[in-house]
Amino acid sequence: MGNFLLGIYIGLGIVCLAAIVFALIVLVYFLAKNNLFCTFVEEGTAKAILKYGKFHKIIMSYEGYNLNDNWEVIAKPGKETQLGGLKWVGIPFIHSVYRYTFKWVSFEQKEEEGKLVQKAISHEEEIDYIIVQDDIYYTFVREAEARGMVPLNIDALLTIRILNPYKALFRVQDWLEATQNQFKPVLVGYTGQKSFEELIEAQKQVGDTVHELLRTSKIDEDIEEDYGVHIKKIGIVNIDPASERGEKYVEAASKQWEAEKEAKRLKSVYEQIQELGDDGLLLRAIEGIEEASKGQGNLVIFPFGSVQSMFEGWLGKEKKQEKGGI
Image (cartoon, rainbow, N blue to C red; front, side, top):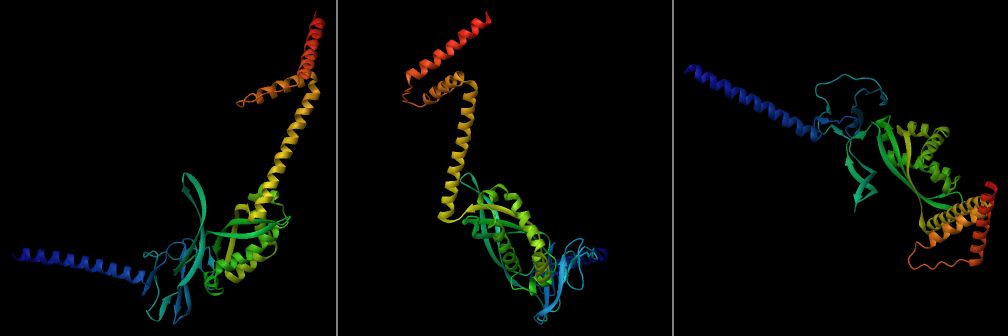
């Protein structure tokens, strides 16, 4: 009987212990989700801790990277912890996690009515973290002008890495907007030196060229020094005519291109006819009749004298060749 009761007590003790452990896990999860005592920091992100409303420190989860005394992200493995992204915040009402409103635009592809459509989607959220690993941000320039005052709408993707989360969060009101405002004038200045046709032909190289201009003008160094932000890559997604004036220019340019293409084709045909002589004229006449007869109800009118002279010339040439062969 004693052994039986002992077994019951041990079983109840194990159940109670498991319940306590589970309750502790739930409690820690609840506290971390609400940034009380501790918080979850996801991989590749960082959070700022305030003390009495003033900046205190940065906590980060980024494998292979750590923070130095100036809160710069450096390639240095930190001490691994068994708690993963669970980080200590401090005492509630004394320490808190910094929260702010972040605005950005994502560039997404969606299928609508069987077609793949590219859309820019605006976001505005209150968040308590900053992404320190490479991330891609959409930006755009409206009513920029190519050479010849052709208005353009340009969509671009910026690959950005945060080098110093403290500077990005506390040295500037909105680090992304400030970075874009430094980038856009350089892009506008470059497109103003190029024609619309040149920009379209070299669209893939435009981003690399503008990136190089940021380097040579030292603007990228200023962005890193002031905002703790590094632009790793610039990609141009779209270059489209803006407003009715831009569309009219593109329409006129397309017509000019078609006219030049047709002129080249006619020149080539004329040169071939000159080389072949009467044979060339006969072949072009036959091709013209075939093309004209493809449409329904087409009446082909061809000067009989011209056809007769071409056939006579051709047949005469054939007879001469036969006689010469005999």
